[in-house]
Amino acid sequence: MPENTTSVITLARFLLGEERRHSHATGAFTNILHDIALAAKMISREVNMAGLVDILGQAGSHNVHGELVQKLDVFANDVLYRALDHTGHIAVLASEESEDPIPIPDKFPVGDYVVLYDPLDGSSNIDVNVSIGTIFSIHRKITHGERGTLEDCLQPGSRQLAAGYVLYGSSTMLVYTTGTGVHGFTLDPSIGEFLLSHPHMTIPDPPTKVYSINEAYYNRWSPAQQRLVQYLKGEGGFGSRYIGSLVADIHRTLLRGGLFMYPGDRLNPLGKLRLLYEGAPMAMIVEQAGGKASDGVRPLLEVQPTSLHQRIPMFLGSAPFVELAERFLAES
Ligand code: P6P
Image (tube, rainbow, N blue to C red; front, side):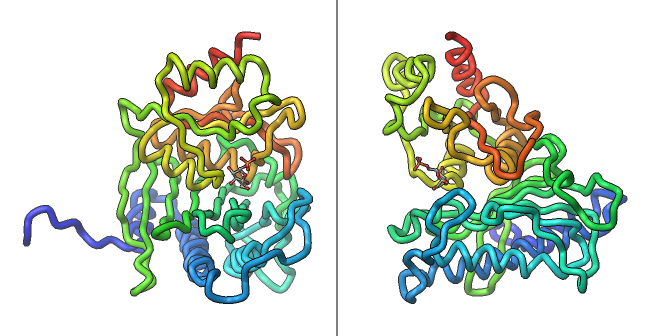
């Protein structure tokens, strides 16, 4: 065997290995991750074709947040629903694109798991070919009825069984954690398989001194937030990188280290990003990779959701940098 060859491990093979390590595993969990991966392959195909077919442009309708919906958004939302609705593992679904929880149709069996997803985050970047992503979060049902309810969706991030994202970039990557580390898989479109490419992803130490924030909102920030960014770009000696697509910005932060911030401001005190579909899953991933995730005051994973689409300020990345941000923000 040639030196330094790496084994070819498909996502399916890896999931089976993980399942074997948990004696109580029923395989339902493995199947859900497999179903999400199938949807990801279909979305990847459309995203990569987007520039070639008339799928770009606004679908005309608006989502629950008043944002224009792009046709790929609609496609991604539909594909994820159809990959999960009939499997018999799901009690209830929730999508960032849907106002209310999505029940499993009566004609299908239900199960014990809750899947929340942002089907295509960063979709405003589709037309300019900037990386976009799918984000997912998996909980166990906590109510006693057969079918899941809103209460099953409103669980704190600390109770997530799994979280992950798919990054549709120069390559399509699926990154997920089930609480025992973070693992990355790269899609080989020629064979339609996600292959293990980034086992046990951990944020580098020492981290790269990069901060990531949209500075166009500087004048709306609190004085403490302004002082923090002034320090980072001045005395702190940080560089700046901001893609404006959460999955891409977080993926870079995982691989290089740094500090991603989307703070609240005087117009939007809780910021723009959603706790259930963006904050909680990304917080689980970053913390499982050895980083830290905060809302500026407390751990993101401890925030108890009160509504399906509530927003949350986000400070994620290398632990020393998140702690630095918290210290600055603690000063009035
Ligand atoms: P802003 C993309 O629209 C998104 O939802 C996230 O992917 C991204 O992190 C954020 O919004 C960018 O927002 O206000 O900087 O354009």
